[in-house]
Length: 360
Image 1 (cartoon, one colour):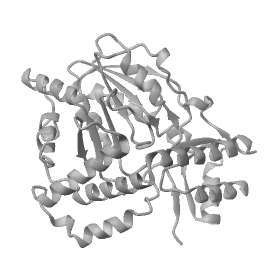
Image 2 (cartoon, helix red, strand yellow):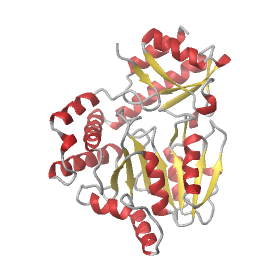
Image 3 (spheres, helix red, strand yellow):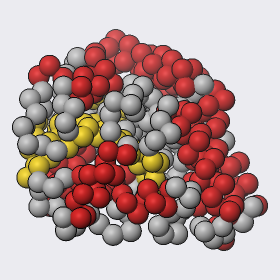
Image 4 (tube, helix red, strand yellow):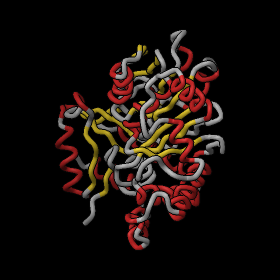
């Protein structure tokens, strides 16, 4: 009997993923050249499907890397000469900040306690910051920053770049890519694929900044710098041999999601999240970790487990119904559950999980 994964990444595979990988093997895509017309067609199809799904303007580049973590580094290298600014409220947004320090930038941060979110009205951006780093969904703590607040942040800071980490929420957030400058995600979470592919969305203004920095002898990286990525993207090629099969499958999954409709996916996500939060609110042994409903993630539901027996809950649910729940992150491993609410899990599966939790 197959397990159902409610883990926040790697996560449950999207229902069509295995079929698409089988097709990729039958087409021998693991052996083709990334300079071939077949690969160009694959890249073009994937980019087109992502543009439809996430309403990405034609002007923006869509690039592929080994992971979203790599994109943190490339982003800072290519757009920050001196100063960056980070909204930190969890382990991953903190790591993004740490990357800037390690790259010898002057990194500012506004930090909130674990489990609290940001609204634009409270954010003061340092005058000389070149890049503002926001997290749409903090995977470690289950906190979201609403797209409307991110858009306000950019409009209040038009002279600065705003980049959004969408790693554990894309394509759910309704981001306006005519407003924000850049975003990134990984495929092993909401897109329901095996890990090993990051996607970076970038507007032309960032390319212009990177080209200026390169002219002034700033180090902007090598094969994955923005001038190189944009140059290759114009031909639907990559600077190096990429994960061809994953790019192919991502395009197919995005196409499947487009056939469902992004509005339908968002409504289903919100309905499942409400069921989970409502159950936790009424439970005798659980309570919702993020207190402000406006800041509660719709894709990673985090709940406190009373009496510190999170591991027992995870074990019992797996034994009873073969469903795997994520543990809390870091110091919260023993006291919290993280329940992924990605498109790969159905309404019926969420209902079954809740029934199993009722018996704990």
